[in-house]
Image 1 (cartoon, rainbow, N blue to C red):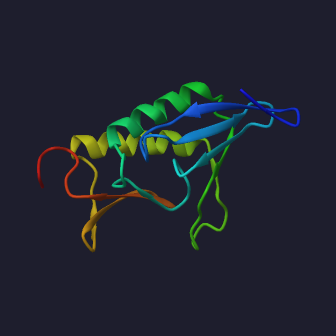
Image 2 (cartoon, helix red, strand yellow; image 1 turned 90 degrees about the horizontal axis):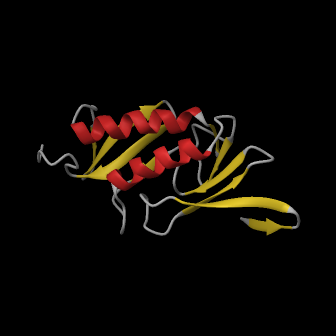
Length: 136
């Protein structure tokens, strides 16, 4: 826990986007400050230290640490979704999408040299090449 002027924030280690990513959970205010882990835009899954498998484990850890009532406060937004805030249901949507990606069951679109996997109308995952081991 971190105390900022009486505001208690629980530090959660969420590797996946990067090895050292953390989120801050404010239990009293039902807010999670997620940084680059999840936000309404294209989630980048090919940076240094990025791991789809670790991201999936972190999503499940975060779901277990929350009540489902929290607002996710991301570090980014896009022009289609003017707010960096998401409902907690976005975690479950991302969980399902990552599982499908790993099994090779989620359709993707070519975007330059990358693959874009749509998750919902305001969020997608961008990867390089195959991440399911099939090489397709």
